Amino acid sequence: MKLNAEELKKDFPILKRKIYDHEIVYLDNAASSQKPQVVIDAIADYYSNHNANVHRGLHTLSEEATELYENARKTVADFIGAVPQEVIFTKGATESLNRVAINWALHNLGKDDIILTTDFEHHSNLIPWQEKARIVGAKLEFVEADEKGEVSAKQFKDKFEEFGTRIKLAAVTHASNVLGTILPVKEICKIAKEYGAKVSVDGAQAIPHLNVNVQSLGCDFYSFSGHKMLGPMGIGVLWIKRDLLEGLEPYEFGGGMIDEVSFDAATWAAAPEKFEAGTPNVEGALGLATAIEYLEKIGMDNIREHEIELNMVLLNELQKIKEVRILGPLDPTKRTGLVSFALDGLHAHDIAAVLSGLGIAVRSGHHCAMPYHVKKGFSATTRASYYLYNTQEDIEALIAGIKEAIKTFS
Image (cartoon, rainbow, N blue to C red; front, side, top):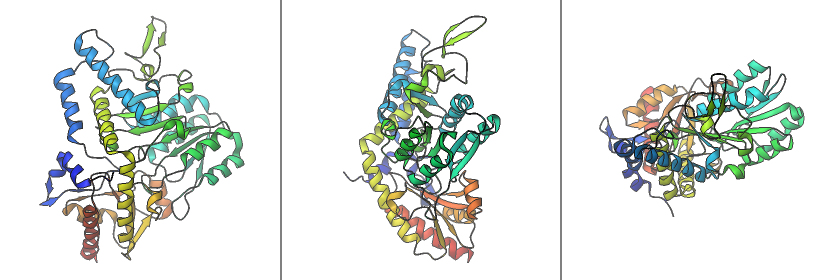
């Protein structure tokens, strides 16, 4: 059933605000999404009625909090086609990716081994691998996007044929936060397995917009954040394939993750507890689970269809403006709901400032993908990113705002 973005917008209190006497047009969802009232209520209910530490008490509040927390884990697991034992709560995708780098890569990569990635990764899926490669003497190899901002499975196949089993890890984004490009992750995983390589996927920009099933993808690690998918900030997920869990050592130590402790040594609890030292972000997990339930009621396929329609409108209108250069695929089905662009003669920050004065929120800068921007000769770009509560009228307001910016600085 086709979603009604105008009706859904009513579920988000912040979207009722006005900025400079303008209705908010929130087009910065790739940075962080807004939160529906049900998510806000779930967090408030936890603190009002169930607040206690989990896994540590026999009293009623602790047992209630523990049950809510573990039910949230199951909700997340079901959403991505996993089992709860494989779901580790983190602060966000950045921590999740760093955990893969520390827990797995640091112990499984050696001198002259190769980490294969792309040339448009978010810094969070580049710097951890740079650092681990530096420490162990490994190298990074890059698959480069073509002139359309796309990469193919064949490009990955060619790299594996060139370097063979020296490639120990493919670390790729599922969807680019700059180009919007959706990568052929399932095919990449299949190729990697032929050469015995592991695959770590940065799913931060995919999980809010696409149906994701980690079993179907065939990856080994999948990382994402809650705040980009209607959940609260400070909560994320690292999914680790079950057959890797036992062989991984924790990288944080303390309460909640131990089995037995003596004065000389300690043993660890089973996963996922052994990877969640200390007091966890219980309210964040509950907020994320509530956000997932909200998304499931709408339907991920309906969200995807809605965003493709908005892609069609925005891409079509931007191509009519001669000063605009669009990054990424022009095919609306090959990208998620975001478009980055540059305007000849105008800096991205100036465009964003004009739009902000009209109540329109976009992102300007290099979007934590500085190497790609430098490589392509952009000091910065403007990024508009939309979600289930954005309407065609929001896109029309954006286009009018861009034209106003051109007029202002011409």
